[in-house]
Image 1 (cartoon, rainbow, N blue to C red):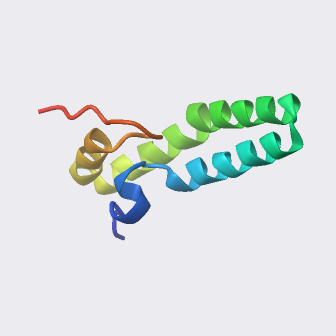
Image 2: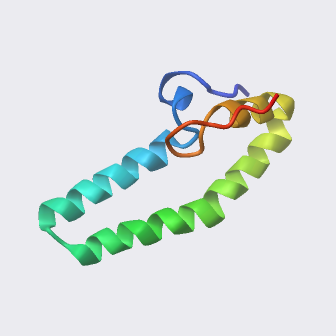
Length: 85
């Protein structure tokens, strides 16, 4: 197994979920639907509170220090990660 940290994974630990959320937002905007936009917000909250922590726990168990270093240097979603020294 290899921990992928290149490509879009350099900017976000969850680029696939981020892209999916972007497509859902674009669809909601295209439809001019506040309800669809609210559903996207719910989708993101559920992912952030359930799926992503479970995946991060499994990755930490599998890759240990390598994943901890990656997690410290790369944001979960977007923005800047806090680098701890």
